Image (cartoon, rainbow, N blue to C red):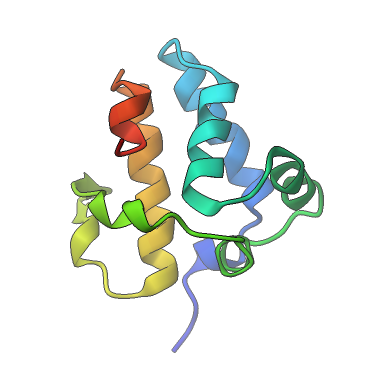
Length: 116
């Protein structure tokens, strides 16, 4: 089975799109980073290093220090697909992160986005 194209895309190529989406709606890069750090367990320095070395999406998630167990609480639709129904693990993580960035752009409070 062939890998999805997104798996081999560099996280660094998509990260600015996450930031732009958030900033367009009055949110900040700091909030985007907070979401990514909460979700993956990376430190700010580790996140910046992953971006700098152009790591692909698949390895970005497989190398994540500690995927947050509360990510299982993320529900909803992204790109027409219900995230809780996605079976493939890496795709599920990618779509979970997409959903969190969407929630940020829609003005949801950080406490709710981070499932506190």
